[in-house]
Image (tube, rainbow, N blue to C red; front, side, top):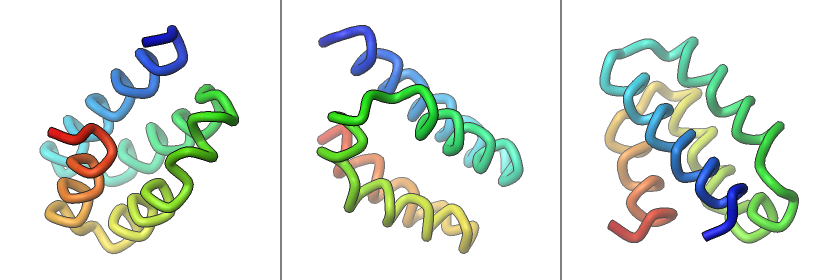
Length: 75
């Protein structure tokens, strides 16, 4: 795993913590950070999932976020 991949996974974990706390403004901030600091290659590889993640975030859909994170992280 490269530093960028590690950072991507770490920030997804931070995003999930904000979802669990119900801090949707924090979730948006972390999503924007992920887009800013993650390599273009990773963003391109997960573009569909990240689009679904953003929709779930905008809808404040905890289950939707969980589903997308499971798809990305393959837990």
